[in-house]
Length: 226
Ligand SMILES: [Zn+2]
Ligand SMILES: [Zn+2]
Image 1 (cartoon, helix red, strand yellow):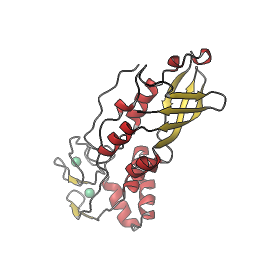
Image 2: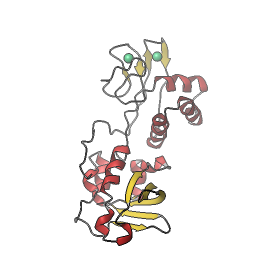
Image 3: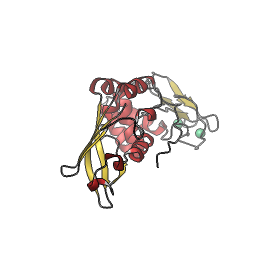
């Protein structure tokens, strides 16, 4: 289960620029959007849940009028390369008119590298057999969540805190929720900052001793990436 899938590295920009645009399809003026890195991550997290109403509320929190917020939310695309209006799926870049239907797409052009894909790879790599503990022989990790505090994935905080706190599901059939602390090494931090592949920061078997520490009684797991 340790095979690593290819990672799409195309979309790593954390920057969103201002724009004045016009949606030819709905005949709407598109208001300027100016979000900080952390705000982009929050919007991204809401997009993942597919909740336009929550995005509108969040944009209102950021200071956009409700009408503006609605227009903005209606022009976000939920998949980074797919038009919100016609599902054309080869959009390239942010703030773009769909070449097929003409609709404007904000396209946050953002996808944190620590995403579900990375979590899945991490989950596969948590091989408790290597700990050589009888009580863990039949244990496996079923899922690593994205952190609840999604803003902790901003580059600034990753660099400052060098830790990601999240939850994982671990057990031997009856899986329980564990508090997971992921300590980030230099390789991870450097790759994260530069938008490069993070998978190499997960130790392979035999490469790093004691990178997995687990307490099944208190349901805590701490792992150390390279
Ligand atoms: Zn439109
Ligand atoms: Zn379109």
